[in-house]
Length: 115
Figure (cartoon, helix red, strand yellow):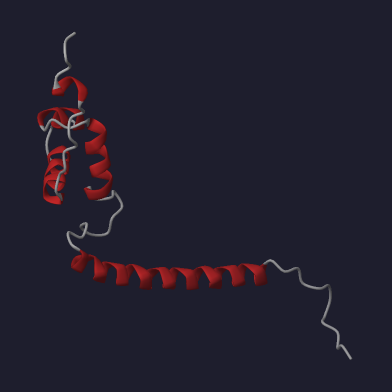
């Protein structure tokens, strides 16, 4: 009986990619005329891997500025977003209160003196 070779029995080891490699692969999909599938084949990756990396490293369509590259860059952006969130919540509360006041039905006639 033939012994199975190592290649037949063992799975291929999982490859690890550093952040710079992942960012570079995402940049290739964003700034070229090639599709994600073509870039994945060229880099010997699975297309779903490249799509997952794009979720993390590609800029969002409605983003205000560039995506922070490091944690030090993200700290001021987080502070700005937190202050904007607080301001938006305050606006929302004011609008809720004003819509409640405006939607109240007035009593008929003049207000009476309550004793």
